[in-house]
Length: 169
Image (tube, rainbow, N blue to C red; front, side, top):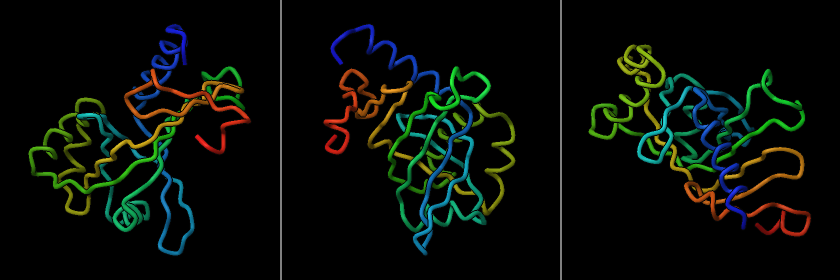
């Protein structure tokens, strides 16, 4: 990216998507089978946080694999073209955070501020676990032929994907 205007557009897209209340969560089971699910989330201290039931498959997968992919995607109703919805994928590393630690309390406060009082109810349940999703790699698609990869937090360093570099970036 070389033009300031393009960087501003990319940053605006990232900001819009991060204001969503839920993310799509992709994990892999013990048997190697992929699982797609969703979870409400909040951002705190440069990471995403999710509060998940220990009874769910995605929680078990996160505990075992400690890595995942998340997607924030534009609502179908507001998309100009269903085939080109704006979306942001993050490759993430996963850490379980104790709910009663300083980080856990701060993350839960961020979740409550964004998602409401249900966070208090769920965080009080013994089977619900708090996970930190550390952002490692980002891929933003803003339309046909407009896909970019970048280090999270550094949209200015985004590289547009082309036929020539798509397999090497």
